[in-house]
Image (cartoon, rainbow, N blue to C red; front, side, top):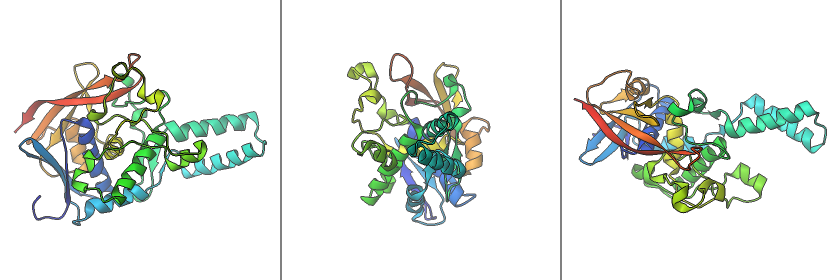
Length: 304
């Protein structure tokens, strides 16, 4: 980096999960410090993502906020309603209509929108707005969005407490574990949680191991910063469908841009000098095409 304040993280631009995780970093930085700019910088075969934050410890500040941030699957009003219905359930006082509402709120808490509260105030719902064949959504079936996001958040927080090297944030791997609020329901935190599989290093086909990792609670390394930050980044920064089925494209930029402008570049809406376009496939993790993962990308072309 230059002498200006800010932070940098190492990134593999051909790993679409890491690319969109960098977009997530810029999104969160934009919400802490409006107008902040970021960009990719190539150094031979290596690359970094640089954010021009107002302080030299900006990344630590951002991650501390992310770790303390309440990630909820319900609004404040819905949370209160759910607590009231759960209390009535314990008292065996629920009507059939109230029981259906209790179940629906539970489903929304696990599978619906996510809310990142103070200080980010961000609603995540991009997976509800696109058809399956053009969406970067990778999960289905028994996977619960809120549980995975919270498991990644807790794993990242633990890593930060253990003095994680922040420049290698996107390379930190561990087994995701059941988050605390779900552990209260299952009376334990030992069970692993299958990630979203945004990180291309995480792809495994069920036939190669002989069983479904998700169904068997297998303990496989995931990358919590990539999983959580990519989920956030994809809200604003969208890959676009390729001419090849089950393939998506994104454009990396190499000059400082705000989150708003960079998002338009990523989707190809704004052609930009010093940018490169990449394509990656959505890889299926089983033969029934229920679960997907991001594959590695290849460069299509550059704009000088």
